[in-house]
Figure 1: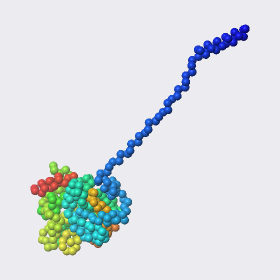
Figure 2 (figure 1 turned 90 degrees about the horizontal axis):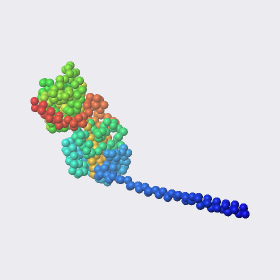
Figure 3 (figure 1 turned 180 degrees about the vertical axis):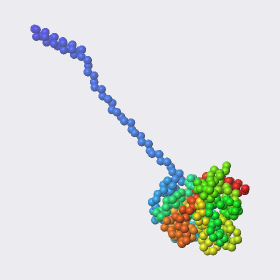
Figure 4 (figure 1 turned 90 degrees about the vertical axis):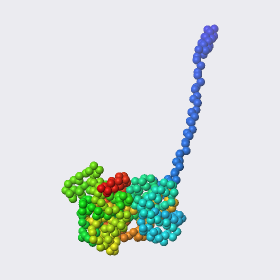
Length: 410
């Protein structure tokens, strides 16, 4: 009986405990994490402008490369069939004829426009979007550096066929085909040596109205040469001290010795001429009775050797004999015949292509060129001349023209 009671009690206890126990919660199942799909936007491709596409197609400007396939360039040039050259040289037609004999499939239209018209035609066509010309073959001077190149109207191209023979300094801002040297010169029939030793003497009374020059008021190239003298103010001051033994006395409108020289030079009445031929005729014609001086081209020494002129550069004059300028070659922006333009540039700086210009007094930038007997080597000439400062000339051109004209009238 007691056993029955114990069993009953145990059952009741288990039932009680079961009733009091809390139910076990079901395990929490986290929902699967669904990652949002990553949407990749298509890269934005900027559309090239017509100019950029032309530069890219022809590997110029920002797409420039020194790697040039000349077989492909020549084939493409023949397919283009034509090239238009804007030049400032009377020899361009002779060069064009020789080019067409070598490349009969390419017709050359070569125009001797003169420097001012090369500049004007190129700029006006570019502004109008009339892309006609292919090759720039001219100096361009201050306007080229200050206006044409910054606006992308002409592009640099250095043929790999001559790149290893042309020093880097002659490839910027464009390829320099030739160098021209303007020198202070005297009539060698009337003088055994140069009658002055220092260009400050040209500001003295004995040389008043006795010096011939291409008109700086109408010829930007001549004014740029004068401004190059101005830009070398320290050397001009040193030359003044060497001649007079004292420092130059500056004036209110002459901030340095360079501007002072230009003022005194203009006040001494240099005689303007319309061109270089007229300058040479005026001071270096055989049989003259009165002695004059001038700024003339060293290349005109060829006429001296032939007996047509009588002049000699003022070797040893202080502070400098003259000014070096250059003829540039470049490809005109969006040229319709870009490969023919490349082929022309390579031709014009080749030994065969430069023949029309190869005469006494002319310098080529090709280091393998040997100057004629009697001509100063380029290294010697560069030591006694200053390279034309085109940026300074561009920055001061208008100011200097007015300055010169005002003092010329005094």
